Image (cartoon, rainbow over the protein chains, first blue to last red):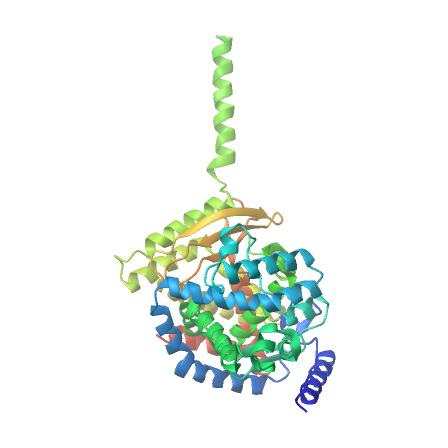
Length: 261
Length: 200
């Protein structure tokens, strides 16, 4: 029954994804499918306000307390969470045809889990492995040319798109080995608490790293919702293109029209 | 005597070439580093927050193409509004930008930014890459600067791209959202800008 429900949700989301593209203001790259439409803006804004309330009541105070911890503890926690995320990155590397990266990440995971003591220490980085780049199913769908669909704000989880939500659901349909051994299957070593604890930990770690910048953005934004939407969509675009090169992700055409000299 | 004249001529030509090449134009990476150094000095803790804001506004006025950013952030609306509205917008945007920019930066104290490299995109733009050095509280941050190089004697900053996210584009989409939420009425943006400018 649970699987039928999930399959139904995925079908609905994919159909929305197909029908809802273009028209919006958030133009993506020259390689992107078009524009991201905020089809459910009223609901999204309400959810955003709810998430902000939740953030002020829970996430922000916890992130502030977390930031007081000594940096070796914070770095160790961050490393463990990154190490868990490698389990989703590897299948996505393979799906994107990046077999070399999949091999490197498999090596990274083995080294960090064993010598790095469940990932507390990033041994692979010290051994000269390339910088770790997270991949997920939303990015893989994007790399395959599937459009973003409508912009969504999900309760608790925050900004997303229809495509990225499908990617998240894929994690729970067997795509995330960490989910499989904690929640989906009963194993004697792990339980649901481990999975949801790691998800909450990732959220708090992210919030703590961006405490000042998000506060600053909120204080100086005239439409904070629109700013967060823009930043989320830009970030996803950058990650899908797997590009550190700024010149590849910027669309210059609008700048070229602005002449002031 | 002939060789003395030749030497004088050589020195004259050398000095002129030197002047043409180096006196008036400045490389984009040097421009960014010098701007960053000025901003760092302005953010020194010996100054009060108000003094910091005033100093940052002066730096922004000299080094940022506020007018250009304002036109960019208007997006497609810059083609349909009247000259009078454009004039009002330019005035409001400048005030908004200086307030927003200076109060964003004034929160930081002595940020350490290192310029790493530069890449010329075309005759009008060079991207300068830099990094904000990590502290105990936050990780290293990559910052790229879009420098408007059309006039090599007067380089100007047009955008900051932080970890691949463009501040100008974010601003543009924020403005577009406000106008769209008000059925395309540009006056709604003006009212929002005025409210921001007049708030403490």
